[in-house]
Image (tube, rainbow, N blue to C red; front, side, top):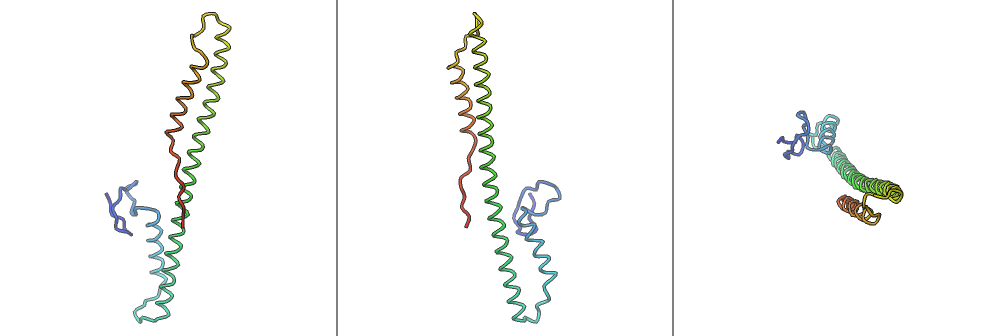
Length: 146
C-alpha cells in the first residue's frame, strides 16, 4: 500500500513508481503545481488577486468535475458496447454451431448407423449453453450524469 501524494489516500500501485492513486489526482497535482508557479505571491492580500485566484480555483474544480463525469459516461458506454459485442459474438457462434449441426444431421441421415443424435436434442443443448453464457455477461446499468 502506498499513500497518494495528492489526496493522501491509500492505494495499491500498479507500478512501483506510481505516486498517485488515480489519473485524476495526478492531473490535479500537476495543475496545483502549475498554478502555484504562475500565481504571484499573495502576501500583500490584494483583493483583486484573491478574487482572481478564487475564480481560477472555481473554474479548475468545475473543469475537473466535468472531466470526471465525462470519463464515467465514456466508461459506462464502453462497458455496454463490450457486453453487446460479446452477445453478438455468442450469437454468431451459435449460428455457426447450428449450421454445423444441420450438416451433421444431413450426413447422419445418409448414414445408416448415424451418431444417435437428434437435431432437437443438439439444438436444445446448444441453446442452453449459449443462454447461460449470455446471462453471465453483465450489462452495465445506465448512469446519469448531472
